Image 1 (cartoon, rainbow, N blue to C red):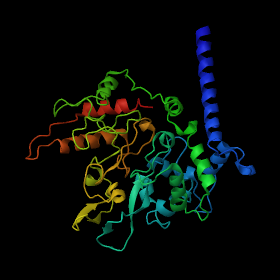
Image 2 (cartoon, rainbow, N blue to C red):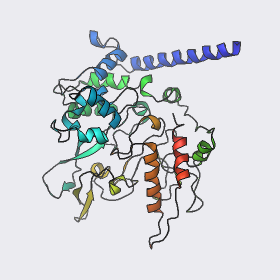
Image 3 (spheres, one colour):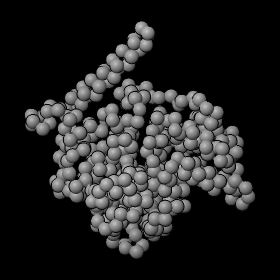
Length: 391
Protein backbone atom coordinates (compact mmCIF):
# COMPACT_ATOMS: atom_id res chain seq x y z
CA UNK A 1 0.00 0.00 0.00
CA UNK A 2 2.84 2.41 0.83
CA UNK A 3 4.44 1.75 -2.54
CA UNK A 4 1.15 2.48 -4.32
CA UNK A 5 0.64 5.71 -2.38
CA UNK A 6 4.23 6.73 -2.98
CA UNK A 7 3.77 6.12 -6.72
CA UNK A 8 0.58 8.16 -6.79
CA UNK A 9 2.30 10.96 -4.87
CA UNK A 10 5.23 10.97 -7.31
CA UNK A 11 2.92 11.09 -10.32
CA UNK A 12 0.95 13.95 -8.79
CA UNK A 13 4.21 15.75 -8.05
CA UNK A 14 5.37 15.30 -11.64
CA UNK A 15 2.09 16.64 -12.99
CA UNK A 16 2.32 19.68 -10.72
CA UNK A 17 5.94 20.24 -11.69
CA UNK A 18 5.11 20.06 -15.38
CA UNK A 19 2.21 22.46 -14.95
CA UNK A 20 4.51 24.88 -13.18
CA UNK A 21 7.07 24.46 -15.94
CA UNK A 22 4.47 25.31 -18.59
CA UNK A 23 3.49 28.45 -16.72
CA UNK A 24 7.12 29.42 -16.13
CA UNK A 25 7.97 29.01 -19.78
CA UNK A 26 4.95 31.08 -20.74
CA UNK A 27 5.98 33.77 -18.33
CA UNK A 28 9.59 33.75 -19.50
CA UNK A 29 8.42 33.96 -23.10
CA UNK A 30 7.12 37.40 -22.34
CA UNK A 31 3.43 36.67 -22.81
CA UNK A 32 2.40 37.35 -19.22
CA UNK A 33 4.21 40.59 -18.45
CA UNK A 34 1.58 42.87 -19.94
CA UNK A 35 0.24 45.89 -18.14
CA UNK A 36 -3.22 45.53 -19.67
CA UNK A 37 -5.77 43.80 -17.45
CA UNK A 38 -6.83 41.38 -20.23
CA UNK A 39 -3.36 39.86 -20.48
CA UNK A 40 -2.44 39.55 -16.82
CA UNK A 41 -3.13 35.82 -16.91
CA UNK A 42 -1.76 34.56 -20.26
CA UNK A 43 -3.07 31.00 -20.26
CA UNK A 44 -6.62 32.06 -19.39
CA UNK A 45 -6.44 34.88 -21.94
CA UNK A 46 -5.26 32.42 -24.58
CA UNK A 47 -8.08 30.05 -23.75
CA UNK A 48 -10.66 32.82 -24.07
CA UNK A 49 -9.21 33.89 -27.43
CA UNK A 50 -9.18 30.29 -28.70
CA UNK A 51 -12.62 29.28 -27.51
CA UNK A 52 -14.74 32.44 -27.58
CA UNK A 53 -13.24 35.24 -29.68
CA UNK A 54 -14.63 35.63 -33.21
CA UNK A 55 -12.50 38.66 -34.20
CA UNK A 56 -15.55 40.21 -35.83
CA UNK A 57 -15.79 37.43 -38.38
CA UNK A 58 -18.36 34.85 -39.44
CA UNK A 59 -19.04 33.59 -35.93
CA UNK A 60 -16.33 30.95 -35.86
CA UNK A 61 -13.79 30.62 -33.10
CA UNK A 62 -10.70 28.41 -33.16
CA UNK A 63 -12.74 25.84 -31.24
CA UNK A 64 -15.33 25.71 -34.02
CA UNK A 65 -12.96 23.69 -36.22
CA UNK A 66 -10.56 22.29 -33.60
CA UNK A 67 -12.62 20.32 -31.09
CA UNK A 68 -11.42 19.62 -27.57
CA UNK A 69 -11.38 15.83 -27.98
CA UNK A 70 -9.85 15.33 -31.42
CA UNK A 71 -8.49 18.72 -32.45
CA UNK A 72 -10.40 18.43 -35.73
CA UNK A 73 -13.89 17.75 -37.14
CA UNK A 74 -15.13 14.44 -38.54
CA UNK A 75 -18.22 13.88 -40.72
CA UNK A 76 -19.94 12.35 -37.69
CA UNK A 77 -19.16 15.51 -35.68
CA UNK A 78 -20.51 17.67 -38.50
CA UNK A 79 -23.74 15.67 -38.78
CA UNK A 80 -24.31 15.83 -35.03
CA UNK A 81 -23.76 19.58 -35.02
CA UNK A 82 -26.01 20.09 -38.03
CA UNK A 83 -28.84 18.22 -36.36
CA UNK A 84 -28.39 20.34 -33.25
CA UNK A 85 -28.05 23.65 -35.09
CA UNK A 86 -28.18 24.02 -38.88
CA UNK A 87 -26.77 27.53 -38.48
CA UNK A 88 -23.64 26.37 -36.64
CA UNK A 89 -20.71 28.57 -37.78
CA UNK A 90 -18.95 25.41 -39.01
CA UNK A 91 -21.23 25.45 -42.08
CA UNK A 92 -20.55 29.03 -43.03
CA UNK A 93 -18.10 30.44 -45.57
CA UNK A 94 -15.59 27.78 -46.68
CA UNK A 95 -17.49 25.13 -44.73
CA UNK A 96 -20.41 25.43 -47.14
CA UNK A 97 -20.64 23.73 -50.53
CA UNK A 98 -20.08 26.87 -52.58
CA UNK A 99 -17.92 28.80 -50.12
CA UNK A 100 -20.61 31.44 -49.76
CA UNK A 101 -22.89 29.82 -47.22
CA UNK A 102 -25.00 27.64 -49.52
CA UNK A 103 -25.20 23.87 -49.02
CA UNK A 104 -23.63 21.61 -46.39
CA UNK A 105 -23.32 18.24 -48.13
CA UNK A 106 -19.53 18.26 -48.46
CA UNK A 107 -19.06 19.01 -44.78
CA UNK A 108 -21.56 16.34 -43.72
CA UNK A 109 -19.97 13.73 -46.00
CA UNK A 110 -16.25 14.51 -45.87
CA UNK A 111 -15.79 17.32 -43.33
CA UNK A 112 -13.53 19.20 -45.73
CA UNK A 113 -13.28 22.96 -46.10
CA UNK A 114 -12.52 25.04 -49.19
CA UNK A 115 -8.95 26.27 -48.82
CA UNK A 116 -7.57 29.04 -51.00
CA UNK A 117 -3.90 28.25 -51.52
CA UNK A 118 -1.49 30.78 -53.08
CA UNK A 119 0.29 29.59 -56.22
CA UNK A 120 4.09 29.65 -56.37
CA UNK A 121 5.43 32.38 -58.67
CA UNK A 122 6.08 29.93 -61.51
CA UNK A 123 2.70 28.18 -61.27
CA UNK A 124 -0.54 29.13 -63.00
CA UNK A 125 -3.89 27.58 -63.89
CA UNK A 126 -4.41 26.53 -67.51
CA UNK A 127 -8.03 27.70 -67.51
CA UNK A 128 -7.31 30.95 -65.64
CA UNK A 129 -3.70 32.10 -66.29
CA UNK A 130 -4.08 35.31 -64.26
CA UNK A 131 -5.18 33.55 -61.06
CA UNK A 132 -2.68 33.69 -58.21
CA UNK A 133 -4.42 31.14 -56.01
CA UNK A 134 -6.51 28.01 -56.27
CA UNK A 135 -9.32 26.62 -54.13
CA UNK A 136 -8.88 23.01 -53.03
CA UNK A 137 -10.75 20.74 -50.62
CA UNK A 138 -8.84 19.78 -47.50
CA UNK A 139 -9.53 18.33 -44.10
CA UNK A 140 -8.95 20.33 -40.93
CA UNK A 141 -5.54 19.49 -39.43
CA UNK A 142 -5.75 18.28 -35.84
CA UNK A 143 -4.27 20.45 -33.12
CA UNK A 144 -3.43 17.42 -30.98
CA UNK A 145 0.36 17.27 -30.39
CA UNK A 146 1.20 19.55 -33.33
CA UNK A 147 1.63 22.97 -31.67
CA UNK A 148 4.42 21.81 -29.36
CA UNK A 149 5.88 18.85 -31.22
CA UNK A 150 5.72 19.57 -34.96
CA UNK A 151 7.30 22.70 -36.50
CA UNK A 152 5.82 21.85 -39.93
CA UNK A 153 2.38 23.44 -40.06
CA UNK A 154 -0.47 22.79 -42.49
CA UNK A 155 -0.60 19.73 -44.75
CA UNK A 156 1.57 21.52 -47.32
CA UNK A 157 3.89 23.18 -44.79
CA UNK A 158 3.11 26.67 -46.03
CA UNK A 159 2.89 28.42 -42.64
CA UNK A 160 6.29 29.32 -41.10
CA UNK A 161 5.17 29.49 -37.46
CA UNK A 162 2.27 28.75 -35.14
CA UNK A 163 1.61 32.46 -34.76
CA UNK A 164 1.40 32.86 -38.55
CA UNK A 165 -0.96 29.89 -38.73
CA UNK A 166 -3.15 31.47 -36.06
CA UNK A 167 -3.41 34.69 -38.03
CA UNK A 168 -4.07 32.88 -41.31
CA UNK A 169 -6.88 30.81 -39.81
CA UNK A 170 -8.56 33.81 -38.23
CA UNK A 171 -8.36 35.98 -41.34
CA UNK A 172 -9.05 33.31 -43.97
CA UNK A 173 -11.39 30.78 -42.34
CA UNK A 174 -13.04 32.81 -39.61
CA UNK A 175 -13.29 35.88 -41.85
CA UNK A 176 -11.99 38.08 -39.05
CA UNK A 177 -12.55 41.76 -39.76
CA UNK A 178 -10.25 42.55 -36.85
CA UNK A 179 -6.99 40.68 -37.43
CA UNK A 180 -5.39 39.39 -34.22
CA UNK A 181 -2.60 41.46 -32.78
CA UNK A 182 0.87 39.94 -32.39
CA UNK A 183 0.15 39.70 -28.66
CA UNK A 184 -3.09 37.78 -29.26
CA UNK A 185 -1.42 35.42 -31.71
CA UNK A 186 1.23 34.68 -29.09
CA UNK A 187 -1.35 34.08 -26.36
CA UNK A 188 -3.26 31.61 -28.54
CA UNK A 189 0.00 29.83 -29.42
CA UNK A 190 0.88 29.54 -25.73
CA UNK A 191 -2.55 28.10 -24.95
CA UNK A 192 -2.17 25.53 -27.75
CA UNK A 193 0.86 24.13 -25.94
CA UNK A 194 -1.01 23.28 -22.76
CA UNK A 195 -1.96 19.77 -21.61
CA UNK A 196 -5.34 19.59 -23.37
CA UNK A 197 -3.59 19.76 -26.76
CA UNK A 198 -1.76 16.45 -26.29
CA UNK A 199 -3.10 12.99 -27.00
CA UNK A 200 -1.48 11.52 -23.88
CA UNK A 201 0.53 12.35 -20.79
CA UNK A 202 3.57 10.72 -22.43
CA UNK A 203 3.43 13.16 -25.35
CA UNK A 204 2.96 16.10 -22.96
CA UNK A 205 5.98 14.95 -20.96
CA UNK A 206 8.01 14.59 -24.17
CA UNK A 207 7.25 18.19 -25.11
CA UNK A 208 8.78 19.52 -21.90
CA UNK A 209 11.50 16.98 -21.12
CA UNK A 210 12.70 15.87 -24.56
CA UNK A 211 12.29 12.19 -23.63
CA UNK A 212 10.30 10.58 -26.48
CA UNK A 213 7.78 7.83 -25.81
CA UNK A 214 8.77 4.30 -26.74
CA UNK A 215 6.84 2.19 -29.21
CA UNK A 216 4.44 0.01 -27.22
CA UNK A 217 5.30 -3.68 -27.29
CA UNK A 218 1.75 -4.84 -27.90
CA UNK A 219 -0.10 -7.40 -25.85
CA UNK A 220 -2.28 -9.30 -28.30
CA UNK A 221 -0.92 -11.38 -31.15
CA UNK A 222 -2.36 -8.88 -33.65
CA UNK A 223 -0.71 -5.92 -31.90
CA UNK A 224 2.63 -7.70 -31.77
CA UNK A 225 2.46 -8.60 -35.45
CA UNK A 226 1.40 -5.04 -36.23
CA UNK A 227 4.42 -3.64 -34.41
CA UNK A 228 6.75 -5.23 -36.95
CA UNK A 229 5.52 -2.84 -39.62
CA UNK A 230 6.61 0.15 -37.51
CA UNK A 231 10.06 -1.02 -36.45
CA UNK A 232 12.91 1.11 -37.76
CA UNK A 233 14.76 -1.61 -39.69
CA UNK A 234 16.44 -1.80 -43.13
CA UNK A 235 14.80 -3.49 -46.09
CA UNK A 236 16.38 -6.78 -47.09
CA UNK A 237 14.09 -7.83 -49.95
CA UNK A 238 11.31 -6.40 -52.14
CA UNK A 239 8.75 -8.54 -50.35
CA UNK A 240 9.76 -7.56 -46.81
CA UNK A 241 6.94 -6.20 -44.71
CA UNK A 242 8.82 -5.40 -41.50
CA UNK A 243 9.55 -1.71 -41.32
CA UNK A 244 7.52 -0.64 -44.35
CA UNK A 245 5.38 1.77 -42.31
CA UNK A 246 8.42 3.09 -40.45
CA UNK A 247 9.98 4.08 -43.79
CA UNK A 248 7.79 7.20 -43.64
CA UNK A 249 6.78 7.08 -39.98
CA UNK A 250 10.00 7.07 -37.99
CA UNK A 251 11.58 9.48 -35.52
CA UNK A 252 10.20 10.41 -32.09
CA UNK A 253 6.87 11.58 -33.51
CA UNK A 254 6.61 8.81 -36.12
CA UNK A 255 6.26 11.48 -38.80
CA UNK A 256 9.46 11.47 -40.84
CA UNK A 257 11.26 9.26 -43.32
CA UNK A 258 14.18 7.07 -42.38
CA UNK A 259 17.28 6.14 -44.37
CA UNK A 260 15.73 2.82 -45.35
CA UNK A 261 12.98 4.26 -47.55
CA UNK A 262 13.42 2.40 -50.85
CA UNK A 263 12.87 5.53 -52.94
CA UNK A 264 14.28 9.06 -52.93
CA UNK A 265 15.17 10.84 -50.69
CA UNK A 266 16.41 7.74 -48.77
CA UNK A 267 17.39 9.85 -45.79
CA UNK A 268 16.18 10.56 -42.31
CA UNK A 269 14.03 13.56 -41.66
CA UNK A 270 11.94 13.88 -44.83
CA UNK A 271 8.58 15.42 -43.96
CA UNK A 272 6.64 15.30 -47.24
CA UNK A 273 5.67 12.32 -49.38
CA UNK A 274 3.05 11.28 -51.90
CA UNK A 275 1.19 8.08 -51.10
CA UNK A 276 -1.04 8.42 -54.18
CA UNK A 277 -3.96 10.10 -52.44
CA UNK A 278 -4.27 12.90 -55.00
CA UNK A 279 -3.36 10.54 -57.82
CA UNK A 280 -6.17 8.11 -57.00
CA UNK A 281 -8.54 10.90 -55.93
CA UNK A 282 -10.98 8.53 -54.25
CA UNK A 283 -12.72 11.56 -52.74
CA UNK A 284 -13.77 12.59 -56.25
CA UNK A 285 -12.60 16.19 -55.83
CA UNK A 286 -12.52 18.61 -58.79
CA UNK A 287 -9.36 18.31 -60.90
CA UNK A 288 -7.27 21.27 -62.10
CA UNK A 289 -4.66 21.67 -64.82
CA UNK A 290 -1.63 23.36 -63.24
CA UNK A 291 1.07 24.86 -65.47
CA UNK A 292 4.60 24.97 -64.06
CA UNK A 293 7.18 27.18 -65.78
CA UNK A 294 10.55 25.45 -65.50
CA UNK A 295 13.94 27.16 -65.10
CA UNK A 296 14.87 26.33 -68.72
CA UNK A 297 11.77 28.09 -70.05
CA UNK A 298 9.78 24.93 -70.73
CA UNK A 299 6.48 24.19 -69.05
CA UNK A 300 5.11 21.14 -67.26
CA UNK A 301 1.44 20.36 -66.81
CA UNK A 302 0.19 18.70 -63.65
CA UNK A 303 -3.40 17.49 -63.62
CA UNK A 304 -4.45 16.96 -60.03
CA UNK A 305 -7.19 17.77 -57.53
CA UNK A 306 -4.46 19.05 -55.20
CA UNK A 307 -0.70 18.98 -55.98
CA UNK A 308 0.09 19.69 -52.33
CA UNK A 309 3.68 20.71 -51.64
CA UNK A 310 4.28 21.56 -55.31
CA UNK A 311 2.10 24.65 -54.96
CA UNK A 312 4.51 25.91 -52.30
CA UNK A 313 7.86 24.91 -53.85
CA UNK A 314 6.96 25.40 -57.52
CA UNK A 315 8.45 22.00 -58.38
CA UNK A 316 6.33 19.86 -60.76
CA UNK A 317 7.97 16.56 -59.86
CA UNK A 318 9.76 14.72 -57.06
CA UNK A 319 8.70 12.48 -54.20
CA UNK A 320 8.69 15.37 -51.74
CA UNK A 321 6.83 17.83 -53.97
CA UNK A 322 4.35 16.54 -56.55
CA UNK A 323 1.09 15.55 -54.83
CA UNK A 324 3.12 15.31 -51.61
CA UNK A 325 1.74 16.23 -48.22
CA UNK A 326 3.04 16.41 -44.68
CA UNK A 327 3.68 13.04 -43.07
CA UNK A 328 1.43 13.13 -39.99
CA UNK A 329 2.34 11.83 -36.58
CA UNK A 330 0.86 8.46 -35.69
CA UNK A 331 0.66 9.26 -31.99
CA UNK A 332 -3.01 9.75 -31.16
CA UNK A 333 -4.07 8.76 -34.68
CA UNK A 334 -6.89 6.62 -33.31
CA UNK A 335 -8.58 9.82 -32.11
CA UNK A 336 -8.09 12.07 -35.13
CA UNK A 337 -10.21 10.57 -37.94
CA UNK A 338 -10.73 11.16 -40.81
CA UNK A 339 -7.36 10.76 -42.53
CA UNK A 340 -5.24 12.05 -45.44
CA UNK A 341 -5.30 15.64 -46.65
CA UNK A 342 -8.70 15.20 -48.31
CA UNK A 343 -10.32 13.13 -45.53
CA UNK A 344 -10.84 10.32 -48.04
CA UNK A 345 -10.09 7.67 -45.40
CA UNK A 346 -12.80 7.83 -42.78
CA UNK A 347 -11.39 5.11 -40.51
CA UNK A 348 -8.07 3.46 -39.73
CA UNK A 349 -9.32 0.42 -41.68
CA UNK A 350 -9.75 2.71 -44.69
CA UNK A 351 -6.17 3.89 -44.22
CA UNK A 352 -4.89 0.31 -44.19
CA UNK A 353 -6.88 -0.52 -47.32
CA UNK A 354 -5.43 2.52 -49.08
CA UNK A 355 -1.90 1.41 -48.24
CA UNK A 356 -2.62 -2.09 -49.49
CA UNK A 357 -3.51 -0.48 -52.81
CA UNK A 358 -0.54 1.88 -52.64
CA UNK A 359 2.03 -0.85 -52.01
CA UNK A 360 0.52 -3.02 -54.74
CA UNK A 361 0.89 -0.16 -57.23
CA UNK A 362 4.42 0.91 -56.33
CA UNK A 363 5.75 -2.66 -56.09
CA UNK A 364 4.35 -3.85 -59.42
CA UNK A 365 7.21 -4.39 -61.91
CA UNK A 366 7.45 -1.78 -64.68
CA UNK A 367 6.91 -4.48 -67.28
CA UNK A 368 3.83 -5.82 -65.51
CA UNK A 369 3.28 -8.85 -63.35
CA UNK A 370 2.33 -9.50 -59.76
CA UNK A 371 3.17 -6.85 -57.11
CA UNK A 372 6.09 -7.71 -54.86
CA UNK A 373 4.46 -6.37 -51.71
CA UNK A 374 0.94 -7.42 -50.81
CA UNK A 375 -0.79 -6.42 -47.59
CA UNK A 376 -3.21 -9.20 -46.74
CA UNK A 377 -6.43 -8.57 -44.84
CA UNK A 378 -4.68 -9.97 -41.77
CA UNK A 379 -1.77 -7.54 -42.27
CA UNK A 380 -4.22 -4.66 -42.51
CA UNK A 381 -6.04 -5.73 -39.35
CA UNK A 382 -2.73 -6.05 -37.50
CA UNK A 383 -1.65 -2.57 -38.58
CA UNK A 384 -4.94 -1.11 -37.37
CA UNK A 385 -4.66 -2.96 -34.06
CA UNK A 386 -1.23 -1.47 -33.50
CA UNK A 387 -2.18 2.06 -34.56
CA UNK A 388 -4.82 2.07 -31.84
CA UNK A 389 -2.06 1.57 -29.27
CA UNK A 390 -0.24 4.75 -30.30
CA UNK A 391 -1.86 7.10 -27.84
